[in-house]
Length: 543
Image 1 (cartoon, one colour):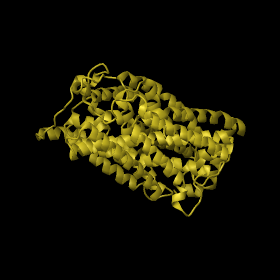
Image 2: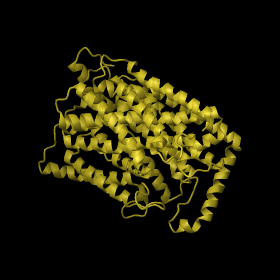
Image 3: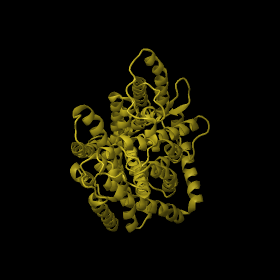
Image 4: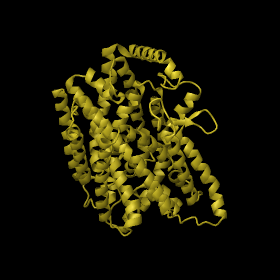
């Protein structure tokens, strides 16, 4: 272990810990005993804060680890993360202001709240909430995987027969995270996001300038990568031909391979803001215009992601040797940076795990509290009871994710995250289409969701790879063709077709539609208009 690197890392970690606890006094409310205050930060964040918060929520530690690791392993499809984070912003510019408005008007805290109100269906709301919960849990677990990789490279997880001592640093980090999230709610990750994003910008920009300069420049890097991948393909030609190994490449293969690449980008874009934690960041803002401005400014993170992806190629050219490809970028930093900047880089990744893990646990707690606890268990729950329930569940979610990672094989968490993307995409028709039209029947949407969830799960389970028999890939041949398509897109098509066909049938049979609690004007309400919270308590001023 490098003492200087550890000292810098520890200092930065202590800084964000102090900030996390101090956040309870930032924008202090009269009381934190409501989900609006604890779970949405008072719904008052402006453009600057929201840019850091939403960016910190989307670009996680696992992104920092997994995107370049995919390219380091020779899979050019890893670049799909760049176009998908560009495609998404015109989409959210269109639909997220409408979601913000109707949520502001009716006091909705989760996307499942909106679905229940729009379709008059607790069952459909429960389906959306359950999907969000099961898709979010492995996402939190993967933040821990990212932290583990960094701690291992730093030497803070020595090879020891005692599992508790080995994982003690990770356990301490999550206890601290749980404590300041419990006390400060969404304000804690919002404040820490300033440090997290600043550090990540600094580290990546320094890395793409400093390291290439020391190993021969970008021309040398691309030549070395091309030669390395070519040598691998030549040496493993028989295995590749037999399907026992995957070819390595610097860009997606032409023809059928590009359908997989394009569908991955499109499907991931459709899924990104269906995740509860992304919606939580959006609903914490103070106006529709804050969302529009952020949809214009957030592509700056996509530029950063492109540079980050290239670090996978830099690691190949630098001769990084690791048994776990996910350690390629942390190992690159340890090999190439001086000790003090290693500490900065490692802190950036670990803090990059804490911010999204906090937001995800809060979003999961909001879902449980509003769409399960209040909807089915305690229908007369007061705002204070909701806040207490959410705080408790946020702790359970964090420690559940911690036990999940420590007790089970990491491959299981990665497989579940693969499924999470497929699952969460199936809420798109109910949420996004519902923002524009009430044409779909609630039972048709529920039927489409159920069939698509089963299809996506079973197909993913039956998809092998050269290294595993199940959950081998997120791409599978489109039905009746040989063209590989992202499973989430195929399942979504099935979902929509069933909903379209079943809707007129159900109406013809006279099946009740459910009462729509919203009106057309609710979707254009802005911050100057009173929402349900101000109407109930005139002493509260709209942010």
